[in-house]
Length: 195
Ligand SMILES: C[S@@+](CC[C@H](N)C(=O)[O-])C[C@H]1O[C@@H](n2cnc3c(N)ncnc32)[C@H](O)[C@@H]1O
Image 1: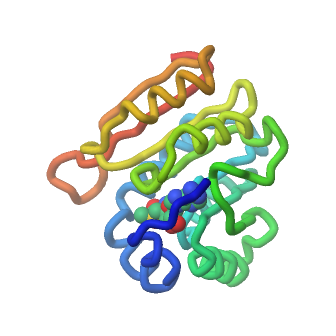
Image 2: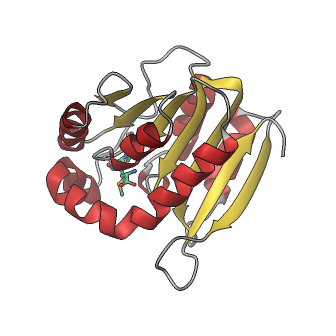
């Protein structure tokens, strides 16, 4: 299902991308961690970072939520190597699991996750519908899906796919403010049981 794009080669160089990720997206990661801490109160929550890259956000969530287990999946083997290494060095390997794979074909049973988050990956999804359908499958019936990406990215492909895969759930879109950008440049596309 996945089609390799030119930009995908960049993510294969996990350490190269990682060197820029905190600087470029650090404010967004902090915002996502705050959202998770405030809005996902379920103790022992199981989370997925979809398109996790080198795992910085997944690790930040794991640190902020010592009760939670955080999985990360990414197509780029180089990025996953960096994430696995980072988790081991931080002593978080027992609560963070990273694997290389396609979001359109996940090796998890139905209803595994309380919350799926994704940061700046949506605009790389070659086919939005199969990814959203698969994320819907692995979400618990009362689970939530939060997709953060550039505000300029059209929301329609995500919304259409989410409506098809999860017709009984509510959708929302929020503009996301992050630390050092003078204007908000991110949006959060959300799917949950209720609005
Ligand atoms: C800009 S990077 C963002 C990485 C990380 N979420 C972050 O915020 O730093 C986009 C990531 O999405 C991943 N990706 C794109 N399409 C994917 C797919 N179908 N399955 C898994 N990962 C995918 C890429 O490999 C890349 O690591």
